[in-house]
Image (cartoon, rainbow, N blue to C red; front, top):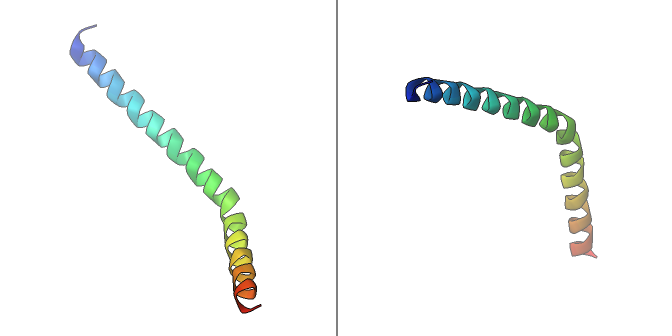
Amino acid sequence: MDNRTKNIIGIILAVVAVIIVLRVLSFLMKLLLPLIILGAIGFGVYYFLKKRG
């Protein structure tokens, strides 16, 4: 294998790795987004009540 072939294979592997990472991240976001929103709302309410009281 010459350098050009290695470069092409490296680029293809990098693209595949990026696609896999994006898929995993989007899956995690779909899973965690409701929890994050609920946590943010809960923290906001707690902070608001603590500030008033």
